[in-house]
Length: 147
Image (tube, rainbow, N blue to C red; front, side, top):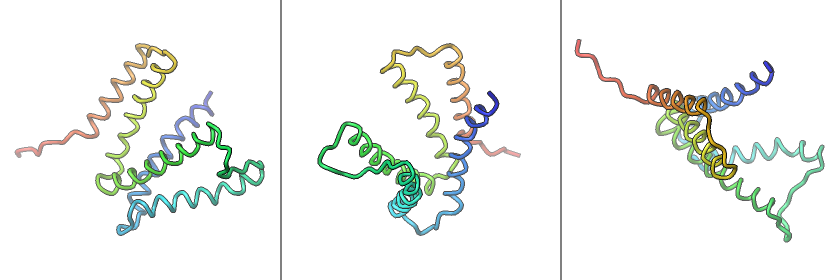
């Protein structure tokens, strides 16, 4: 199980590194939409060899299936997310932006309850309480001391 645990830690680590890299390496005068276009262009170029090896080409054509429309919707959602991400990190910093993960977790729990009828266990509720405690501790404002 240790390799799976390390892999599970890898996702949040990569997200946090990307937030910090965006804050540090972003050219200050660069706007969010050109940055998003650059991310999508680089990702497309990186996927070309994968698509060639697996022979899984996808193009727009007349016979769009539900899966094709879901892919188009995913593209729109991701593009919107990247624009918002670049702007929030520019305006408020990577630590503030990292709090989106808290809400992503809650939304995931909500979808699981809505679509699959899942009822969170007491352990999940305890984890949510710890999650929001962490959110409070990271985002609280400290009062200057009167010394």
